[in-house]
Length: 228
Image (cartoon, rainbow, N blue to C red):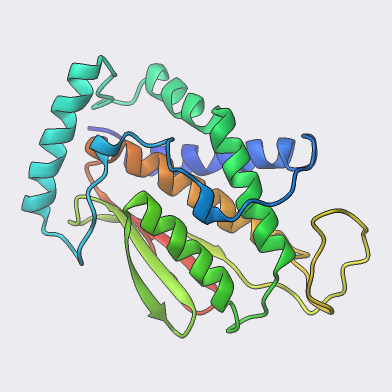
């Protein structure tokens, strides 16, 4: 049985490393609205729109269909975690289109910081991306929070969370994607944290057929939570 906690930790760690190495190391480009993101990173056969909390039985049937698709495509099942599985996850995270997409998402969040309990636009951005990935979620939670889920729908649950609020600080650094809001700035990395969690959600959704648990992103005010 796959070690789901290890998969979640590994996925989030990958995006932490990639974002920290590439956020400022690649040529700056103008932000592209997330509505233009094609979602081509995902194989549409692995996506099923979550309509509320699906039952474990229904999800199990869906997972069996996905397993058959994976087998026919010649991909590893990863029922037991191996180095090959790690390489597959890493290759997904390193795809140029994935890196470019996440860079755009992070810059949009950085340019439009919102203080705690005021993250309405940030929350909308997250929900737009979740909709494109066909990941179910609950909103609102304590005003601006979002909770999304990937997996079977049954216990036990693993949760990964990220804050999404900015600080009442003026950004003094002059660069193309600096804060557009006077007196507000993402000075402690929450823009990157949210972006990493969105990236992790995409990889986990594409490998949902391998999950034996439910991953959730629980979120109160100021938070975006992914659960499975």
